[in-house]
Image (cartoon, rainbow, N blue to C red):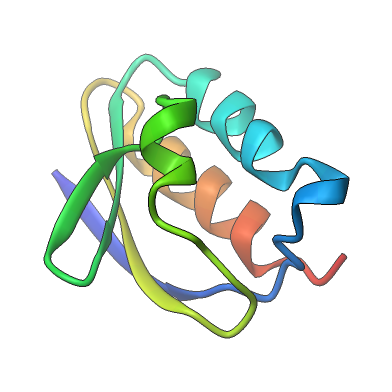
Length: 85
């Protein structure tokens, strides 16, 4: 399992549907991918789970993954969250 701390730089407002795009990014990988925040560990491939986190720009969280392509998964999701949009 690999973990990486990330600060969200991406505007997560609902009009741009970034949560759906985040789930799509996580779903590209075979590994299990999680977002950890405030003592919660949520499956990053679950749209309902991700919506429950109320992510916003400036939030600190941890991206973790476990599986064949865990390094690529963590880097891909972290890059998505770190990109200013």
